[in-house]
Length: 280
Ligand SMILES: [Fe+2]
Image 1 (cartoon, helix red, strand yellow):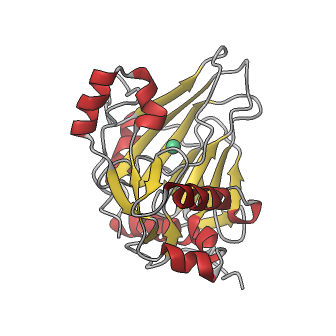
Image 2: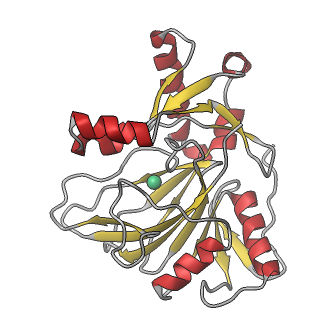
């Protein structure tokens, strides 16, 4: 049975987008100083709902960064476009003439040895319609697997690297150099969330290469099956952006997908990414 998640917290209310994933936080502004008690509750809401949203956050970029820092150290992405004045901010921009978008299911930076805890993304330029982000609950996706598959994946480890989304712009020499700096990472296929203790699928179609110590055909078939879990609507919520909307997701518990359905329009969003720990 679907557990009933809390909607009433001491310092704000939340409005769920689905029974188990995604809730809009009402009555919080990402501006200025926040007492530890509020940050603690935001963190709890994130753990409960896996992705939380805030509207009307027309705050300076410095506030976005400062809010992110309340949850941990911020990473600087080596391959993305970073904000010229604030390297902690990744700028994801599609112009009116862009031909493709980052539309695949993934969790951020799983190619790192210690991948991200969470990402906080703010909408800056949003198309009149389209450009939604979809989120999928990896706990539910795991729970939905058969016992046979769960057993097969018990203790399995997969390798991840950055080459899929970022390698195409590098020549062979640069690829080699970057792989030395950012070597392939090995993570459990099913990770245990370090704060909730729940198990979730931790392979994704953007960065996972193979399941180790397994025939390639079997690894490919299992990965395909696991990737398909993210695409099941019952495990998802979908967020409709407005300018200055903010989405804060837990990369340890969800995957996301940025729908690229707005050709002819611009979309610009800015992200800070909180450093996480080694998955187990
Ligand atoms: Fe992403």
